[in-house]
Image (cartoon, rainbow, N blue to C red; front, side, top):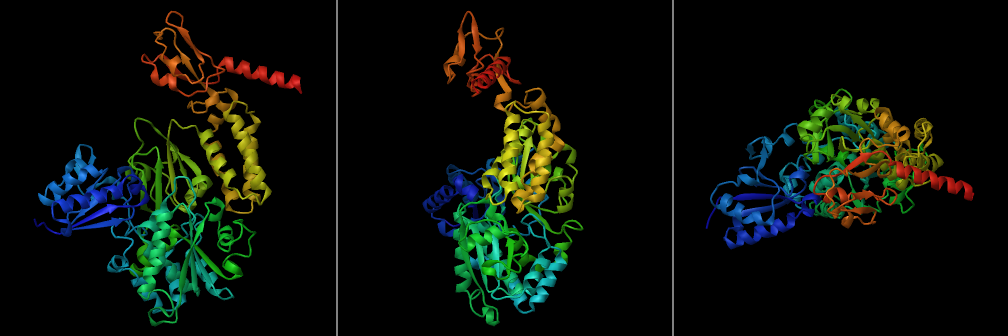
Length: 616
């Protein structure tokens, strides 16, 4: 049997692999061999294609057909119908408003995206340098090596590129500092210690296009006069580590790394160091200490790494996405890059969309896009029938924005003015079922656990804030607690040694600013308006609806539900652990979830408090 040549691109980023992408590949190989057309189909394992909610996904060229939520069982139908008979399988294409969308370009998720750093992710095999070179890879490096380091720095300055790791410091200025710094040798470090909850931008870039990041590092090294580079990648990213190591080996084999690269005076080598998963090592001085085998703790600045970094030598630290933008700028020009975005925030930004949103995944959009466009046009809006409530931008270091901020433009300065921040690019969307006090507690708990403990404001202050939040969510808060949280938060921001402590109070301060009424309800009414905080809600059985079937009592893990068919059933509030089993099994919906602490529980707590006082 003979068919036209087909390229089958299977997304093999970590998300799709965990959903069974490799099993899908094996099934395709089996079916293709069975039909004697294996040699006519080029199967390519790509990096992340973006839409995690659609996964596993694959594309078929030359038509560009985009299949979503594919399973191994679908392989035979795709081969028989599409590959052999030329009839694409419509049921596996994205369905949108009663229409079938055949290609990526038709899907709303992609329409407002502009791919720069993610340009090749999902289109090439990241383990083949030949494919990267065929798409123009290392062209930028060749051009840069034919000029002066100062020319490369000037190009980046003209592009307006700012660091994509969080603070948004101008990249060209940072390169210039290291270039002019005294001392030799000099180093370049790629910060891939991505630790924000829900963030997977750096991982996806390293997995999907490792040569793009390596090329960016080498251009940066030439510009600043560095001879060695280090990729600092957390150990939880085994695929990213494997692929960047392979990229380094391939670059050496092709003469693109090593001594006198491309017959120039530039020599460079790169190494990979794995981190143990400490969030604080995302801070550049802590990261540098970890690379040197020391405990990952930040140090007071100055001196800055640009003057004293690795082994006290000038060191440039850029994050993965920053390096991913370098090569395109030199190929397409700094004016091309600066034409995108806003006056102060040029280019595009990669975000990881997660939470209560239809289209979770990896996206790249121009700076200046509005919060509404990102959530509704790209993200597809809120899942189910719930309403949008807030979006957490910048991970545990950022802050939240509300429905009042949907028209806010996403750039460095505007987000900072509103109490949020760009951060590395984590975006967590929340619907109206979320308790904002509990959300603030969650992020602060993360920061407390990840604090290195070196400075007192962070080590002690964050723990104090968490204890206050814990009391509030358990109905033991005082009206003065809100002001105390604000005072503590602002003090910790001013006095902490590094970026972790300086930004950790942000989720608390922003939720107090925009959702103060929820804090007051927890404190003044002993009630959680969204019925999330277990200590401030209870389950109740309506005796008029109860039919005495005893299903609830039989499913109760603490046997706190008692009664009979005649007397109906009641919940013993003191022993209830709020598991919700009774709510799930009740056939007549006689059980409801109520906001507020039950009076019986209040009396019980008051009694315990009195007994404790008498005992003491």
